[in-house]
Image 1: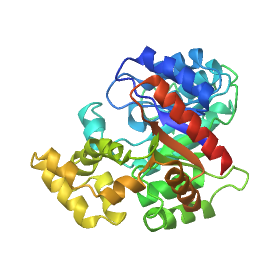
Image 2: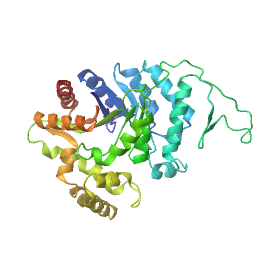
Image 3: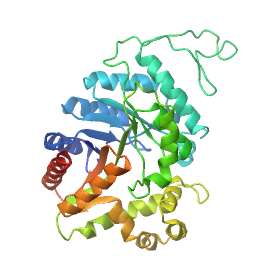
Image 4: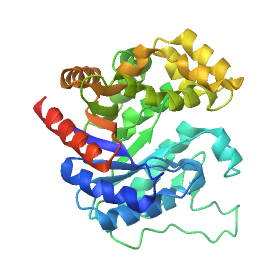
Amino acid sequence: MRISMLLSYAGGFKEAVKEVQLLEKAGLDMVWVPEAYSFDAPSAMGYLAANTERVTIASGILPIYSRTPSLLAMTAAGIDYLSDGRCMLGLGASGPQVIEGFHGVPYTAPVARIREIIEICRLVWRREPVRHDGRHYQIPLPQNQGTGLGKPLKLINHPVRDDIPIAIAALGAKSVAMTAELADAWLPAFYTAEAAQSVWGDALEAGNKLRDPARKPLEVFAGGAVAFGDGLEDLRNLARPQIALYVGGMGARSKNFYNDIFSRSGYEAEAKTIQQLYLTGDKKAAEAAIPDSYLARNALIGPEGFVRERLQALQESGVNALNVGLLGKTTEERVVNCEKLRNLVDSL
């Protein structure tokens, strides 16, 4: 079971990479590099490639609307080359607030677009002349569009791998089914072992029925914040602001993917309350409305026995890779928690 984490560089990107170097030695296997509307992810991924030796470097995630499919493939191939085959291309739709508000591009047909992008990326990596006549992407551009001079081209360089792993950040039933069918990894949000089957079970089953048997089983990343010890339950409260933001304030009242998942995870009434409080400006009350039971299920914080039980519950629900946040006031504390988690995971 691989251990991954989201790169947080609030304290400085170069400082964060120095910590990744230590965590790599302590057992960290993978780093997700975010891209919202801050600095771009590929620049950071290239820097990580030059300063790490073993960890997989994944975009977490690149929004599909901000780049052409061919550029997504080129970027992944370039980072895979720099890292000697350690890239994972993480893709997602983001949301209309970012895509239309920051990039100025219509937020349309995310599932269908990702399906076409996956096909195009794999064509590029195999160095085949790119020909794609899809509903959303036509490559080369048809003769009746543009100058009419476009012709099928193939990637100049020879990639390190002709099939770079693709991860999809998916929440909705259609996108999760597509992920299970085509992708190599799935990065869900607000995943709890107890609700996984009721929320995503049907979609995963539908997608897996269509999956190419030659492709490895889907890698499912979930987990939560990590801290080992007695009397640490209060650390679970550190997640309240972010959960309240996503469940209560991310997206519009009528279209909030995270609120929907929270509701379907057994907290329907709480989801409505959190959103109402957050959107009316009472963020602290929204945070307080998050049930303690959810915080416990969504974290790996507590005595080793508790963490082991949560890991086993995740495994039984279908999780075969971890996505965690290593807690600690210092780098040294976070490294120790990584080492403890590595040892515990290896003992399961």
